[in-house]
Length: 136
Image (cartoon, rainbow, N blue to C red; front, side):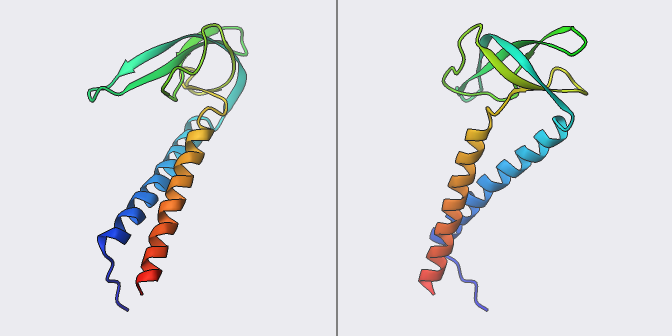
């Protein structure tokens, strides 16, 4: 078998697979952290702006919520986003880790980005297969 693949076919494949692997790793990591998650209501206090070394601007929601035992916790959402997504004093459903109460996420907030990354990855991978088959 001859696997002579040009860069026009290889690059979309590698990028597509990278997108898919990114989502899978993210889901595995979230699965470990939120394996024993508890769902509750929270209130967005504000959104904190973070600027990276490269100048990227991302917002993270600071959320106040109550544990089952009545203790109030304030923590930062694991998922960052741009532009601002929540209004101050906005009620949200969250999940928090039983093992580490500072690990929280707004319920369903990462679903859209995961679907976008999976779709892009699948399209690029399928496109690279199309190019490979068409070149034969």
